[in-house]
Image (cartoon, rainbow, N blue to C red):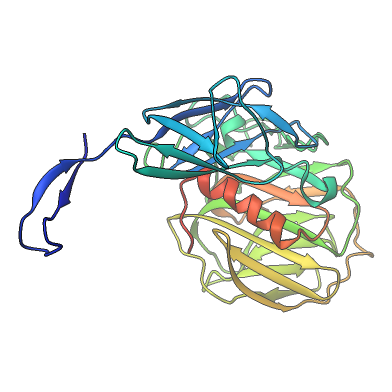
Length: 337
């Protein structure tokens, strides 16, 4: 049991005694009807689903060591009480002494965001491989089946890693191995000037000429890159030019949820762990993009561990961006940066 200092007179040096903290935690959370378990990080709980396309009311199962649990003053009974998940829920857990602890519970269903514009969703924790195995196919769980693949062995160079040091499962891209995964003939990846893309990754290094994270539609298509040597995030029109959004160097050897939103031919925004870093004018027109419905993740020059990628064929609203980062930050235990 945790012990906290208590004082008799508020002084930092007088009258201190140890008082055991009162249990008031949510220990487990799930929605059985969806077959999903909540991810709990500190006082945040995220529920996510790869399949649902609308959010409604559900009954949650939960385990607590508190005396009672309420939402908006209504007592919550595990396996019985139904709540609407269209907005975040504030769960109040009350201890036996009357003290309280608040949890934010939010359902984030990426297929719902951006009016159903999700087209790519790669998650390393969906890979059923052993540590160090080559990744022949990385399945897309957006519902569009845009699975990316590599050439047959022995030329497979992107590896699956369980990441014992970080606790994350990742796809390991290394330039020394010319790591690259691609797809020709994708579904629903029409050329669109607006777009939103998010990565959870650990940048290892940059190399001369820069790094391509993802390219959609090949020549003249949308490309997200990293500059060399300052590791700034770039939004590009492949074969034309790139725009530096925040110009802040992406930190190396630590995981970051990073993303950008382009609004038509007007502006681009860059986010780190949910914090807006900058917004700049962007005028790239992708309507003339060559090789439609192609994708490549990395182009052989990428040195990074990638845990998750999401791409939307539209500019997400600020509210939807917040939901994406609530999901990513909670899942990967990331703090605002």
